[in-house]
Image 1 (cartoon, one colour):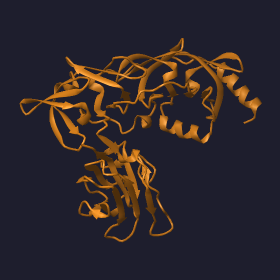
Image 2 (cartoon, rainbow, N blue to C red):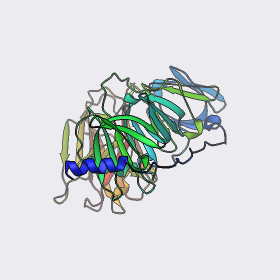
Image 3 (cartoon, one colour):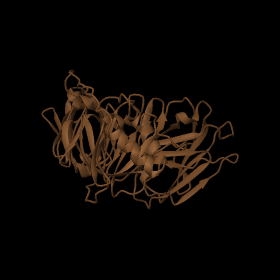
Image 4 (cartoon, rainbow, N blue to C red):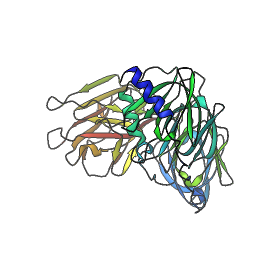
Length: 417
């Protein structure tokens, strides 16, 4: 598209009819607090129990389990599972507006507006909230037949460079995308105001697909965990508190935001007691396929490049490997336990058949596991006390070929004392 056509198309969109009202916000569950029933508690080494959450303070969580109170330091907690997610990924929900925070949070939003550099939103997880404009990275406005993930992929192919200015990506009546650099001024239900070529113009929201905001450098606090919503929303937090049936979190963007308990699927914690394997870099990588095709190992994705999924569960953290692949990590004797969930990713179809070996200083730490498509994922837990080098080996299985051997080591982590 020439620059002249580009400008003409944008001006035509700016003059288009203003869109009508928005759909009403989703209601919240009337069934009471999600924490009024037992939750599943998992500690960092993989051990788990069920109990009623009583409180979360700055340093510990208290549960009532088997008729007695049980106190756990937050650094020993890994996950509190409350309810299953309704969706695997928020970005794959058709017609769902999605707001991405610079902290890595992703919120499904019902309503959104911008005024005086403050973005007001309404979401299932935190209800109504206001964040500074600098805290928002991207906003997706898919049509009913579109998904935010599809918009993200199409935007990536456009190779829009630079984070020093805002970008509004509009779509004309023929489905052509028009990327417009400039400055976002305001958003309301009837119009989006955007400064282009030093002139303020208004566009109907029905033509807007993506707004990508300029990156503003600033200090960020390492999250202590994140809340995962039943709708797939993710909210990292720097502090968390639960008492009197109220859950509140603080982030770099929000202060003591109250979380809708009925919208919570999981509370996940970060701790100095463990490290995710996918956050570490192997010191040695050896990969080869049976034929010419080699699937490289991936961090937090399957070896097919997709989200890791085994059975009906999608995992956010882990290592995706394909036979034959050998990864070696330098532990330096700092850890005591390795834990993961191993299995064949759904990308393997019904052909996956691979062998998993875990070695410490070249000695077997577990009996070799035969992993096959359709089998239930297998929990893996082994002692790595004093181990200097940990090796993960995925080899051809009993069938002797590598077809479908997409192996996931989901939630793979190393635990300290």
